[in-house]
Amino acid sequence: MLTEFTTEQNLRALSEDKQFEHFAAFLTVSSSLAEALDTGEVVIGASGDTGIDALAIVVNGSLVEDATEIDEFAERNGYLDVTFVFVQAERSSSFETAKIGQFSFGVQDFFKETPALPRGKDIAKLAKIQASIYKQSSKFKRGNPVCRLYYVTTGTWTGDTALEARRRAAADDLTALRIFRSVEVIPIDTEGIQRLY
Image 1 (cartoon, rainbow, N blue to C red):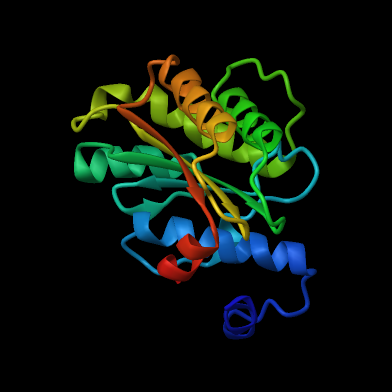
Image 2: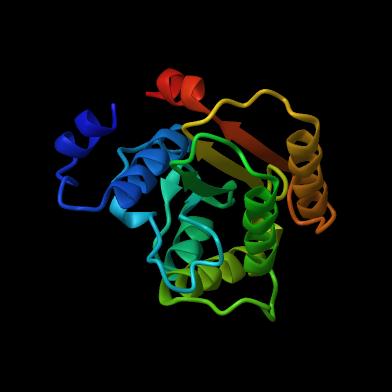
C-alpha cells in the first residue's frame, strides 16, 4: 500500500520514514476535508516539530495554510467550524506509552501562549493560525474546535492496559484545557491502515 501510494503521489525519492508520514497524513486527514489533500501541506519538517509528524487545521471543511484565511472564513461564512488533526507516524511494530506521552505533550504545548518546546518554522506558522482561530471564538457557532490525535503504526492495537491508560490520560489532559468540544486520541494499527486505505 505504501509503495502504491508513494508512486501515485510522486514521493518515491523520500526516505521510507518520510513516505510513511505522508501516507499516515493522507489516511487520517483526508476524512476531515471536503477537498483533495496534498500531504506536503500538512507533513511537518523534522526540526522543532514537537513530536508531531503532520498537522492539519481544517476550517469549514477546508485546509487552512495562512492566518489571514481565518478572517476570510469568518466574514464569508459567518461562523468557524474547526478541526485540529495531529498525526504521529511510527513504522515500528508496536505502540509505545512513552511515544503517546511525548505526542500528547507536543500537542498540549502547541496550544500554549508561551510554549515550553522549541518550535520549528512549520509549527510556529500553524500556531499563528491557531491563535487567530481562538481570537474569533465568538464565531464558534457549532461549539469549540474538535481535536483529533492519530497515532499510526504498523503494529497491532491490542487494548493493552498501560497503552489504554496512557491514551485516556492524553485525552483527559487535552480535555482539561477546556478549549475543545471533543478530543479523540485514536490508535491506528495495521488493520486500521488497511481499512482507511
